[in-house]
Length: 116
Image (tube, rainbow, N blue to C red; front, top):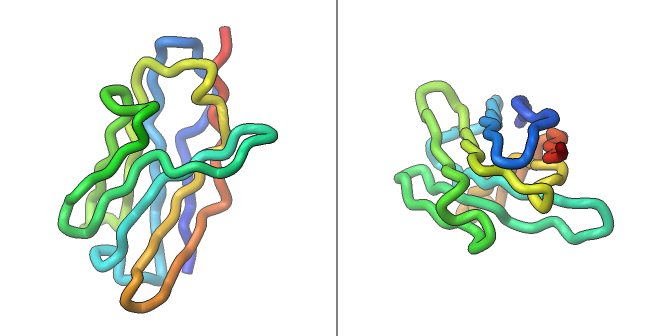
């Protein structure tokens, strides 16, 4: 099983980035896909989640700025991040979870830095 994130980088405040996470080795459509982030000296926090059926959930801090989406045919989940703020600086992790199968997998993370 592999979850591989991409799309992180350095962006100025107000800018946008789109993160991608490609999954292999799992029945992707059966997994709830999530994005977490962890800033320095802070706990990892859930940013957004999307079930295989398309239901979404977002952290309050990013509502209206970030959008999670997925393409089950491509085994890929995305996080579109707009109006980025310095507080969004963190390592962003992709997570796949299937509660019925008691499966939970993580990607290696991608760094997002918001700075002028």
